[in-house]
Amino acid sequence: MTKKINNLIVEISNILGISATGRLILSSLVETKKRLSVPEITAEIKRSERSVRAQLKILTKLELVKKEIMITKEGRLAYQYFVPRIDGLAKSVKKEMIRRLRRLEMYMKGIGGR
Image 1 (tube, rainbow, N blue to C red):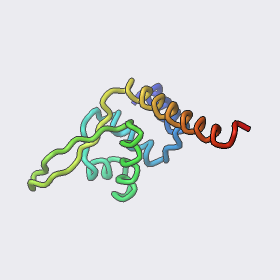
Image 2 (image 1 turned 60 degrees about the horizontal axis):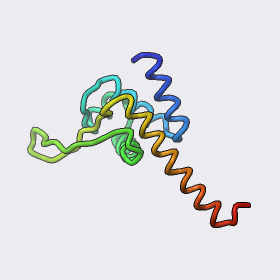
Image 3 (image 1 turned 180 degrees about the horizontal axis):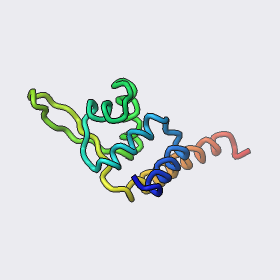
Image 4 (image 1 turned 135 degrees about the vertical axis):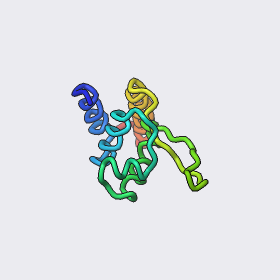
């Protein structure tokens, strides 16, 4: 992975308070440029499945990672996770920051703007 992309992921993680595991997931998805399942991500970054699932929930809520349904070899439904476009990461961060600023402004109005 290029240094610029790595720096971008580190900066996004710092801004949004994403954990080290979340950062590893983002890096792995950007680096592989493929859709990965939870077991594949777990094997790639060497973290527990529980931790990976928890971080994927956060990353999808922040819209940094997208998911789509797939059918496994055993015929079960599962999700595959991916980063659609690298420039989409910055847009997702901007959207989240705007959402947080609006919430902050709402709280400020509630206390009289002191």
